[in-house]
Length: 304
Image 1: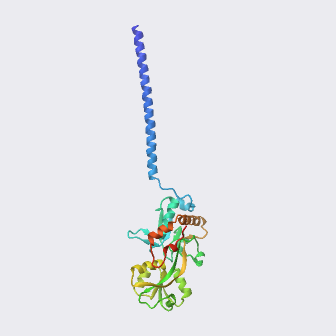
Image 2: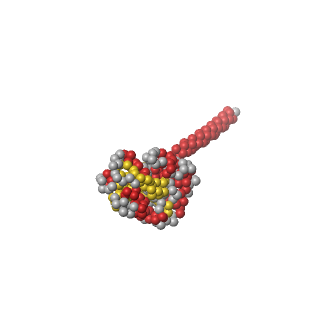
Image 3: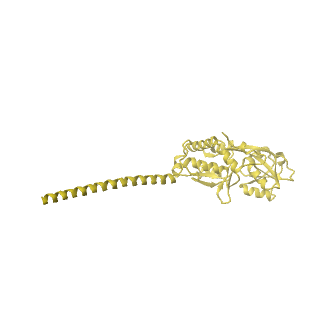
C-alpha cells in the first residue's frame, strides 16, 4: 500500500509538472505573438514616418537613366530675379526654380531631388547638347531658330522686352533707339528684335544680367532693351530709371529638351500640364511676382 500511494503521488507530481510546463509554453507563445505584433506595428509606423512621398502617378516618368540616377540635372539662371536667382542664403529661388522642384517631386517624391547647374544665354544650349544637363529651365524664349537646335516643351510663361532709360532721357519709344547705344543680353530675343526692327541701334551685347545692369548704371549706353519682368524689377529699386514705350518681342518661355528626346519631352510636358490643371503656376507667380508695374502677372501664365 505504501508503495502504491508513493507511486500514485509521484505520478500526480509528474502530471502536475507536465501541465505546468505546457501552461508556461502557451503563455510564452502568447507573449511572443503579442511582441511580434507590437514590433511589427512599431516597425510599420517607423517606416511610414520615414517613407518619402510617392511620385505622381499621373505624370509620365523621366527617361530610365534619369530615374535610376534619382535626381534631375537642370540648367537654370542664377541672376534673373524673379524667375531664377540665388536668395540671401545662396539657395536657388524663383518662378522657374519652383517649376523644376515640383517636377522633381513628381518624379521622385522629393522636390530636392534636383541638381541646379548655372547657365546663361550663350552656354545653355551647348550644355544641353553636350548632355551636361537634362533640360533647360533658364528664361528660354521659343523661337524658330532655336527649334532647329532643340525641342521645346509647352509654354509655361509669357514675356516681352521693354526699353529702360534714365527719367530725363530723350528716348521715349523704341524707334528713338536708332543710332543710340543700347545694352542687350547676348543671344536674347531682345537683341534679335533690335537687329530686325532697329538695325541702326548700336548694340552693346553683354552675357550676364548683373554685368548688363552695372553697365547701364555706369552710363555705358543710352538705354537697355531687355525682358519686361526683369526690367520692372530693376526700375522698382532704381528710381532714376523708367520704362518707356511698348512691350514688344513677345516670346513664350518653355523648357528646352534635347532633339528627339521623346521620353524627357513627355515627362516635362506631362508635369507642366499637371501644374496647369492644379493652378500651381498661380501659386508660384503670387510668391515671386505679386506685381510688375503695369504688367498683369496673371496674364503671363497658363491657367486651368
